[in-house]
Amino acid sequence: MSAILPCTRPERACDTLDSSTIGVIEKPISTFERVWNQDWVRKAFIIIFLALLWQFYAAWKNNQLVFPTFVDTVKAFVDSCKEGVLPARIVGSLKLLVGGYGIGLALAGVMTVLAISTRFGNDLLETLTSMFNPLPAIALLPLAMLWFGLGNLSIIFVTVHSVLWPVALNTHSGFRSVSTTMRMVGKNYGLGGLNYVFKILIPGAFPSILAGMKIGWAFAWRTLIAAELVYGANKGGGGLGWYIFENKNTLEIPAVFAGLLTVIIIGLIVENLVFRVIERRTVRKWGMQA
Amino acid sequence: MASPSASISPVASSAQDTAPLLDVQGVTLQYKTKESLVTATFRVSFNVFKSDRFVLLGPSGCGKSTLLKAIGGYLHPTEGEMRLKNRVITKPGPDRMMVFQEFDQLLPWKTVKQNVTFALTSSGRMSGAEAETRALSYLNKVNLTKFVDSYPHTLSGGMKQRVAIARGMAMEPDVLLMDEPFAALDALTRRKMQDELLQLWADTRFTVLFVTHSIPEAVKIGSRILLLSPHPGQVKAEVNSVAPDDAAGARALERKIHNALFADEVEEDALHH
Image (cartoon, rainbow over all chains, first blue to last red; front, top):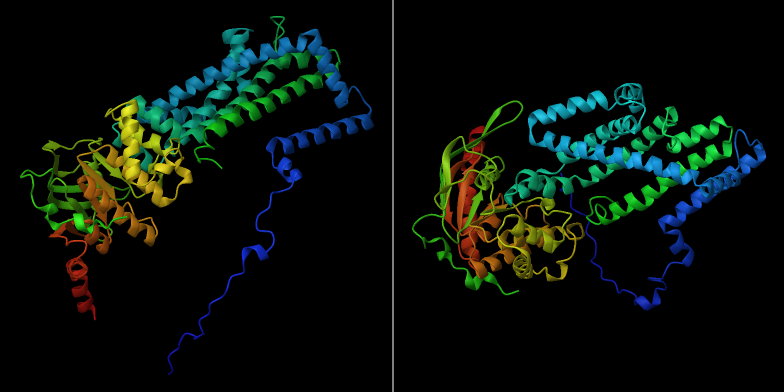
């Protein structure tokens, strides 16, 4: 039996070419590519494309009552802004939204801090989130109307409900996913109690917390608009949901679309300016999120 | 970098102080998994003196990391006692800084410099400008001056470990606890880091308790080596290391340690065949 020997080959040495003879080694990319690499340029392109699509489809459909054109919608939007109705409605909605969202975040914070500091708090949070998270906020509206009357309080109540559970769920899972090493480092510094929560757990869980805040924001909007569609006339003011409802009743369909467009624009602004900036200055800068 | 060999002599482990800095007496450590109660170490005793480079060496499963975590205050012994400067260890604290194996031991939301100053300020050691000066001086010692304002995710593994070492040393703890800090590094970087650690020791003579499963690393880093047997960890021997420039002595010691650690297995193998 012959032993299997590795195939022997001669050694080799090569001369490398001088880099000047190779041609392009590094060259700046074209202006078009550089512009196209900007996130906002590509996104603006998508938005313009959708607006054009809307305009052409609606023009072809040619039915103001069912599907007004983009131009008509913008016209209604501008008119309504001039009259001062729409800005008042936006302010009305945003007030409730910020209030409900803020209270929801604060409650979620308190509950998750309780949940990570005590086992009972943990059980409480887990039970409550599994009970209430699937419950649509709008289903609570009739109850809220009974308890708090036909006022802002009822709307804030359902908004808080819609924000609290998803944010608490995300924050809690974020806290638990902070690595053991990082926790040990915190303990090593002698950190304990709230100091430990604020200096180690919250920044360590920030990607999850931020994700929860985004979901909470979206849920708050939906709930608010839906609640305002159910009622909101009582105070004469009302918000965007009421604005949409009112105009539907008078068959001012372009104005209905203008109301929806406003919701979309506010959503885009908050997502791309507020959350994007927070992300860039925190989790992206820290390399915790790509 | 200058060779550390000239300044490191084997006298390091001779008792400069009569009282040990760290006194571990008959420590049994147990932890529970979902299925069973595991005894990690059984009645382990040893003493660490000031300026020792004390190595805990043993194969995986000998409870050396568990022992280090217990000294760090993260676990409580079921039997025995651990005293640092004659005070019983009960919880984690900045007098025993840990350097972990994992790269995520740096806080990603802080720059290199902030990671070090945060350790100093949040433990209440010092504040503001003083902490910054101290941080910069130790980061300079580990050759990271250029990267003080970088975030950890932009650094290589070796650089992250250097930051962790600088952080541990900047706290000037009674004892620096190192849990296989170089195990996740590539071989070339590991060698470089070992040399740097010895150089740092030559400069400041800190006390370090170092866990490893590599015999050559133990011989290179340690001045005193504790050998542990596996399942559960028990003390097998405690030996003095050789001078770093004594290559032949190091090889002989490595062989001796190898024989001491694996003698049982050889006997078992002989019985089987």
